[in-house]
Image (cartoon, rainbow, N blue to C red; front, side, top):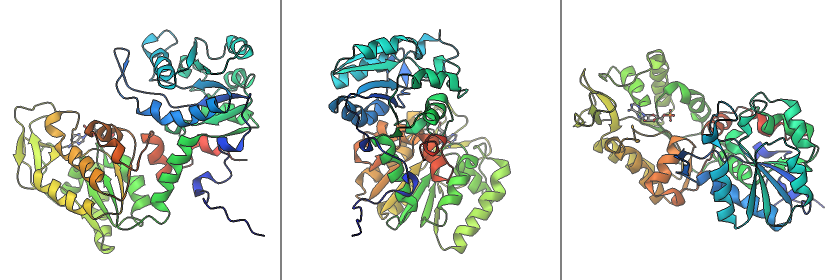
Length: 406
Ligand code: AMP
């Protein structure tokens, strides 16, 4: 008899175990999460990464596992850099789950073993910021050994950190026999695979943000899969310059103008859509809102720079995106951190929210924009890993995933 699985394994997850594959009751789980949330004066300003981690944490608690949660937070210079303490994150986790979260000052301390000894149900151990120990970013085996000494099963659910070969992502699972992924990574990979594995058509990728160079590998990966690209943000100006249009002081990557020119020709040759801005919101410099104005034509004056897409461009982009069945979005349409230059980015978020198709938002700034727009719950998926999702999509092997394959 042939048994056919009803949920085929996503290509990127082949031979990787998930937490469901282990008998975890009573076992000590080292759960690597990405709880790297933005903080302002000790307050969490966006808890998306915490809530995204909850399904795996809840599953472990329901099954009666002894849970050790580990994450990095920001880029501390040393263990004394207390503004990066996991304390607010541990506190919020406790509130959201209604459990006791014990914060361990020293991630590699013997104290963990003692707490595990008297471990109670509904108690979680949270290690202090992994980057307080330089062994983490140095991927040091001695640090990993100190964790492995009390770990039965290693689970990685830190998608946003999978592209980094750090001790908790790489050296530790290298030492472990029993290792796998949690529900978040499973979802992230399935979603990203769905973009390159027979996506529903039309498939449009929206690319924006500061630099063309950052997006070239993903353009190359998607150029044969998508029906069109919608380009905004500063990267659009390199494309306009390639068409000989004056762009004033707008950010342009001079060494990528040739690439942009060729890409426009390649899209034409494939008879695919490539939408670029036809009008702009401009000013004389980044933070100068007093000289902000609508530039109703495509060319920009010498002393001005494009900082957001204009109303006609928004109309064109909305018309194209409304017809798409699959949308991938990475990068804002303008300097959205400044309210005056945020209209284009939020119009894209709203259009995606209204589109009933599949809408996948890459991490980083577009994820933040989707959350700020108030439409986060209308997206099919918002990736928790900006760098990791782009690297995965462009076909690079993520060290944190590869080490989990036999
Ligand atoms: P990235 O990390 O490449 O996605 O770029 C995000 C950054 O691009 C944000 O901080 C935006 O403020 C910036 N950005 C977007 N549009 C523009 C623009 N027209 N000019 C300059 N910076 C921009």
